Length: 261
Image (cartoon, rainbow, N blue to C red):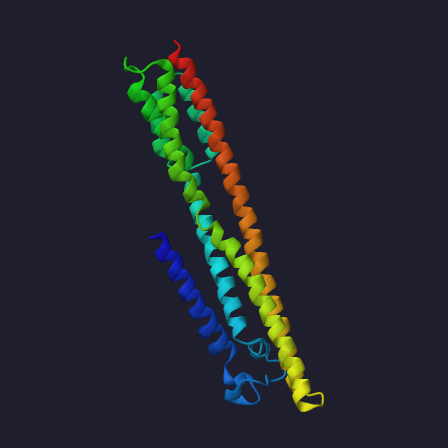
């Protein structure tokens, strides 16, 4: 399902960026002096001027759309992972209940919170409750089994928190490279126009330079947006995992003390 979603986002972004925005909207013949040729934008026609940056501008727009889409996707996923209410308050309440020995109340608290922290804690509490009074398990083995349940839950929850971050980092790299490629191609065209005509053609020179500069700008926008988003979400995930680890440590200590009584 995840792969299909990612593939759909990429394909739709390319269609919207290259065809709808770059070709249909920016390349509207009414914005150009020579109409369908789309090479000489009218004075003040900003969109038509950006269109002269070439097809790579459309690709850069698509990359920006991809980045924005996954920014919103990550925001929604992290909000879902946080569950209902403040995770820090949930952990505090749950730890207090566990210290009092109220395992059922702690489980009810997890069911109510429904976040990633709650899912991990519920696995730990449920497993400990199952084996707490089992004579076949020693005190040490009870803690080992509880830790195993925690590890299994963490292996399920952590990938959900980190999902699609690699796409943001990839977009940042690709946008930079595409922008540099567009800059290079634009400058080549500008100097070719000078070489072929033997004289300075303001129109051809401006087309080449505009292609270079608009691709540079597009590449930088896409890269900056993706890098900032990637760093923001990486920090969010790291803080979230740290919070889970701290809660796990407290729960393990409580269960360790409980098994010795």
